[in-house]
Structures are given as structure tokens and as C-alpha cells.
Length: 164
Ligand SMILES: CC(C)(COP(=O)(O)OP(=O)(O)OC[C@H]1O[C@@H](n2cnc3c(N)ncnc32)[C@H](O)[C@@H]1OP(=O)(O)O)[C@@H](O)C(=O)NCCC(=O)NCCS
Image (cartoon, rainbow, N blue to C red; front, top):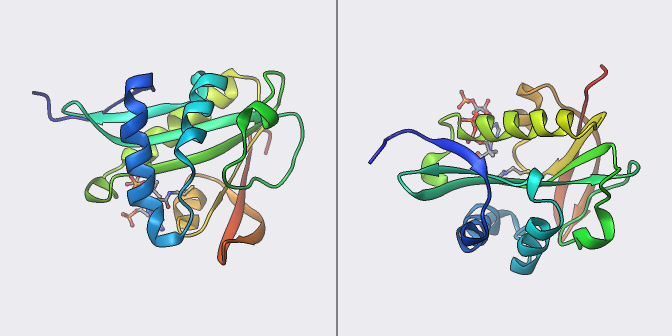
């Protein structure tokens, strides 16, 4: 048994753990997503879906899709309708770390993976929305570009430009 975290592309067998993790992380904020959305993201853009694993347990995930133009992200969007292989706007649709493993740099590892993937995919910017982790993304070079409310929760829209 190794005691270090690895990040790797998601596999279909990981999806139940990802759904469980999403439920744990986002229930307090009222922003959990429908389980079938994760399966759809895996099918539509597996290259942009990564997990962090420790001792055979999934302790973090991050998923994404590519858009043709800027728009406001929202929860539970069907990636079959919104993802485009030719898109240059890289949207991080979800990211969470198991509560017991937060603040141990695992989120930073996953975010770095996604930023690398976004560059490799030819994207010019990365966007996402967050209710509570704005400082985490600011620390990684994002800035706030707007805000909106969903299910009574205030969401900050964050952006990272590769050209800036
Ligand atoms: C936000 C999250 C993904 C960050 O991952 P992490 O592994 O905990 O973060 P890291 O250890 O890589 O980075 C830690 C730094 O990021 C910042 N940070 C981390 N979580 C933060 C949070 N919830 N709020 C504000 N800043 C945060 C801090 O500067 C922190 O440094 P510090 O511990 O010295 O204060 C993780 O805490 C999480 O899953 N939170 C709940 C779900 C969520 O909010 N997901 C993001 C929505 S898109």
C-alpha cells in the first residue's frame, strides 16, 4: 500500500465514487449535481475528467468540457448539448476533494492537470463557477468575471486567460 496521491484519467468504475464525493462536498451548498451527468461527461469528454487516488480510494475529481464561445455555466447541463470538440473555452464543470483530504494540495494537483489539458486541447481560457472556493482559484491565477444565483446559492464566475 502506497501513501501518496496520484492523479489519473477517470475510469468508468470510478463514477460511483465521484458521485458520492460530489454529494459529500456540495450538499452543504445546495449545488450537488444529478448522478447521470457524471456518466454523460465521462462519455462525451473523458480526456477532461481526472481523479485523485490514495490507497485505491478516489479522494478527488475534476471534470470539464469545451465550449465554442463564452457563456454562463450552470448546474446539471447535458454535455452532449454543450460540449464541442472544437471549442476553445474550457469549462471546469465540477471539482471536489473528500472533506478529510482537503487543504493537502490535492485540489491544486487536479487543477494543474486540468490547466495542462486545457492548453493541450488548444483552449484560450478556462472558466468555472464556485460558491465557496473563490480564494482557491484566485491563488491559482483566476479572477472573478461575474456572479449569479442558482437554488438560492450565490455563485462566483471565475476566469483564467492563457494569453494574459
Ligand atoms: C476547493 C477545493 C477543490 C480545494 O482543494 P484542496 O485540495 O482543499 O486545496 P489545496 O490544498 O490544493 O489548496 C489549499 C489552498 O487553497 C485555498 N483554499 C482551499 N480551499 C479553500 C476554500 N474552500 N475556500 C477558500 N480557499 C481555499 C487556500 O488558500 C488553501 O491554502 P491554505 O490551506 O494554506 O489556507 C476543495 O477544498 C473542495 O473540494 N472544497 C469543497 C468543494 C468545492 O468548493 N469545490 C470547488 C467548486 S468548483
